[in-house]
Image (cartoon, rainbow, N blue to C red):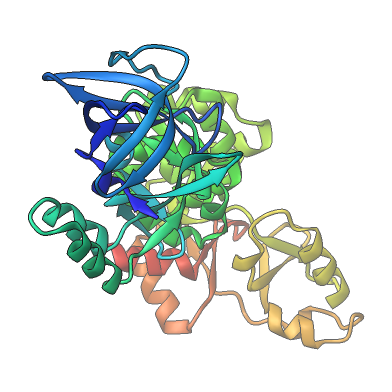
Length: 409
């Protein structure tokens, strides 16, 4: 294993032994081979030259290589080339296992004997202290001493195979394949923390690679400022797809942060039912029960049995983790009672729900956040229905919403 920082400035020699210059860059063409070094860039007489090579020998004293197919030409790389020093070192990447954003300090390359020749392949990126030390002391101490010190520090690495190297953008960024696979398996709060750590350009690139459901979960967890930044960078159709995947109250909060013209365009691109749910919530002031409630809840006729509640829960298409209570309504759709889900699960299927119900505790749509939080605290609630003047249920405020408000304060 060699490290990129060890190879920079090594002498580059041709097969006949004459010195070509000093090594400045190693070039990979991802569309041809994801991690094979196919070209070198070297400095000679103050100028940078590039040439495809076949490696004949490599150690910490220098590289011996045979130019392939063409004579060296002045450096003129294209967008299909990945330059390890320029495009990888110091770039931010996502360490999903560590649930944080890290910076690449070095690249580990392996010299492999294959088909009678040698291949130099990138195998890992180093994101720990060992790589930083190697870079800081390179040239100041003998290379063997430096390698021994960095080995003693136990390098912290991420395998090269986790990168999606096919695309590099004008800002010389790379996207990790892990960003749209493993990132989606993280808890949305952890994924949101990672998104907040990224610089705006990197954040947009990663967010754009996620599927709509994962993007919606993360969007609901990031700060309002980040929400605006991410949504403003999306096409209207894509933004609508993500908003449709969100809970109505969270979707309304996001749209309320956007310019009115953009918000209206997104609503127009949404499916009719989702558009209606979100539009209704946008009519309420943000810091009120109406502005914070969700319209996704389970309500049944007060004469229904426990089996009907279980069937409704199974058929429910909204976020099941927020469903802690079944609400009972009379024929006029007025709220008559609240049944904790735990009681329903312990009851026999044919048991009527009405005797299990607690007297309804509710608030009107204009009740402020502080008062709503006080009601939750006073009655130890997990869900609080919001009703109109006729006591018809409009939506439900859930305990996680209250925790979020208090955290913001």
